[in-house]
Length: 219
Image (cartoon, rainbow, N blue to C red; front, top):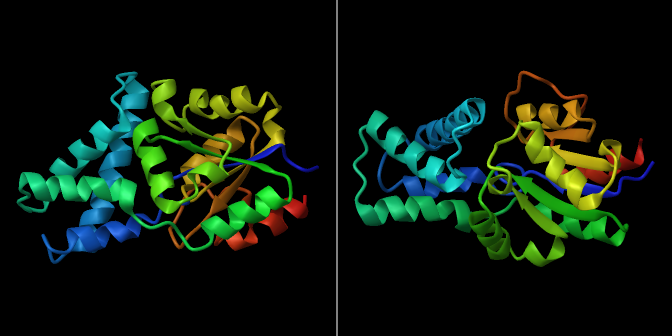
């Protein structure tokens, strides 16, 4: 059965977060560790906000996570340097398989969308910077419901937009917890494991988006 829509996570799935290392490199010799800790802290703050129902938007959490990471690793950041690093979330490169995959899905008649924990402003800026914003039906962002994935309310935005059953949506994320969260409400969830380790191991797994259409066609 063909899906109504293919919905993508943004950060780490379409957007290559490792590009942030180049921005961090002038300020520390441990740029890889810095970016990983920054990302881990960003997600931890989002999970905490979701659990306690004390919403702060993703841009605010990203900035706080940056400050906490810099303090932990004893990296001094001037105002301009801090702003430069934060801009990386809207100016980083996208994976090379993103544009051809979205084009191929569109050619096949599938709707495509992004569903992200990010804010509408930052998500749209990142997608526009990559040149793929106009190729998507919609950018669905967690600030609309003031919650964070894997909370069910965030995934349900896609159901409300497309007015379809959960099984009519293919959801793709590089985060295993995200793919598993989408699967729990009935999405046809696919984990795009771009070399990261995971603990939940969703049922469907690919290593890059070039494999996505073949997986959809096999069902």
